[in-house]
Length: 160
Image (cartoon, rainbow, N blue to C red):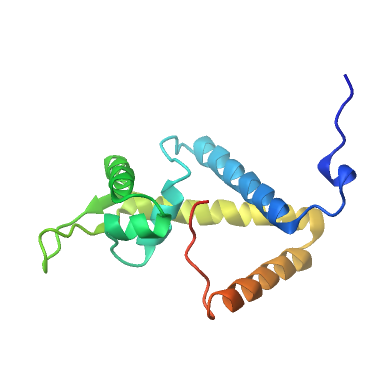
């Protein structure tokens, strides 16, 4: 049985979308391996989207559903799992008792800080391969493309 040639050797014009998807997958897998190595065994990849959505302000399950592109029931179930994991807390709104905004707990904030730390480690590993200038050029180019496409702002991070 012959070995398959690496993708780059097969086609040096790999579409950027495919490379970005592969790079994203690489980063997420490495992130979760490092989280587990540091004792965070109860973190699922979907949690990151919720943590980001709740980082700056209280967020409802309905808002999460819209941001994540999932049903309200699925968003509520995901939020419940994160409440059970002590990453989020649910409060009753003073203005409307039917509204139960979600906020990050101290544990959720620690997780988010650790994720950012690990992403810095991973970026440094990329810089060790291609150089810091090239990593920053990729970041700058992506920011420029995305802010142009989304009216001057970066869009929310959403699962695919």
